[in-house]
Image (cartoon, rainbow, N blue to C red; front, side, top):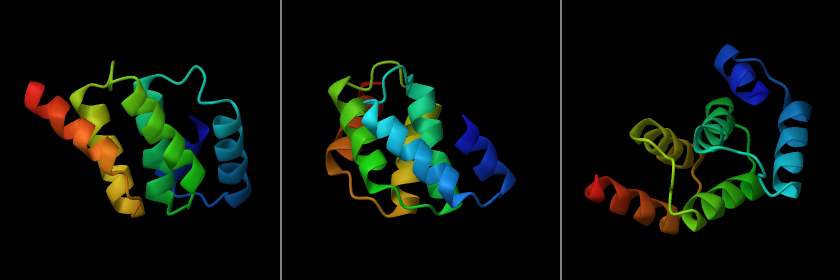
Length: 103
């Protein structure tokens, strides 16, 4: 999770962020576990980097998988990332709310 490290350190790396987002979307997020999905969108939001296609792909993958494997921390980090980035993801928000109610 290189982008997570860069965001945490506050290092600007627009080319890196663009390349990672492009590769992740092109690869269909293959191999991404729930924590990696959450950490990735968290990193983009924290860094203030716009990546609409990446955010859309992560939301779609998370909802399609029924949020399987997402623990409470992953869920909260994901929702925080979308809210902070200003990305509308109503289906994702509804799925997270439902998961929270289910416990």
